Length: 505
Image 1 (tube, rainbow, N blue to C red):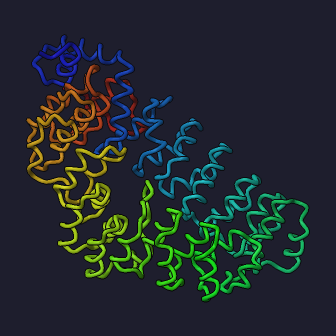
Image 2 (cartoon, rainbow, N blue to C red):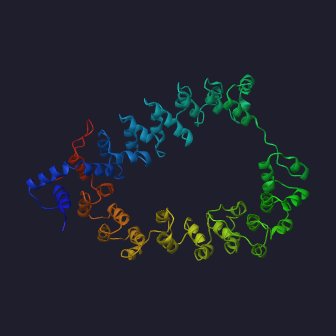
Image 3 (tube, rainbow, N blue to C red):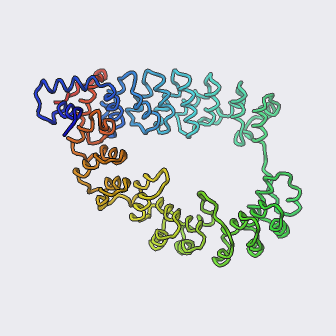
């Protein structure tokens, strides 16, 4: 039996037979519920099917509901929503949207010249940080801003003319000068500007000059050069990647510092036979580095007593170089080394037999990492979706092979994730979707409420106070007339010059 709130929404939107008096009373009661209105408004403005006039109506509100404010901070926006947000009269709202990483460049450009100084600075900071290309004439104006922090971030804007970028090395503010001095700009600056920067009283500028003028010296490749190297970091770098001569390689393999032996074990320029003398090294990290060399056989690899450290490890570069070779991928997928098998899962193209082998791998993380590959089989995706404890388990439902007919068999499964998976079945019926809106799990109910296959009568019921009004208003199947009706009840005005919205009948 529908409760009081269900009855109100059904009567108000003509789902139930009712007298005009009953309907008017239902509308009055709903019109008084401002908390419900905020939920509707938040759902409607973020509804991907909402027409532009709905979005424009929402932005006539002042203040905007907090749910709309949150949406503006983090979500992709339509062109209409972005335009409405960047011209909204309240600077706090414009500050919200300025930090949105999905904001279209044309909208961010408007905010770089906003009347509010915090909005201006944040907008330029975002354009700099996300490498967003703004109109050239705008970048020049920003580089001439009276605000030093705006000029400083304007230096990094793509499209800023070279002469303007170089001119900022003579800026009155030291932080701007420091940012303008880089390895790119240093050789292009006039000699007198470089001389002035070298004698600059500000330490930030002098540090920038030191970095910009620094010339990398080749890493040591001989024993004599290595012993003469005073920088510990450069000695480590040499051990890991320099083209070592024979004497230096022998020195590193026998060194008392395990970090240098680890570098030698990893360095492909150390001869294989010499590197294998570290097979029984007392330091586990040395043996682990040795186990990942490209030039040892599977038999030699298996003879190394190594332990794989916890956490995620990037695929070795030499494995990535073999991603285009099907035979090499087959060999690596059969390796005794679990990290090599995990690395194979990152290959963009995998032969079917390799996929089959990896999907049956004894290592949980081999199977899990395969799920990130477009070739992951459906059955494995569903298995990991149901079982994995990671925070992003839900993302597995977005993989190419996840959704397919047959998932509805999980609609009554004790595992709520599998009940949720039933909604990914393209053949799920409206009746099943409606059933899942009554699920005991919040996540399942929410996804079902947002499903466009949900029958309209149940969707209207969910708009009621005691259900999921925001999610229901977000449902893309919500009729436009009903969207306008919700805003009418909430007392949301029409924008100037707009046509009169049709009220619910």
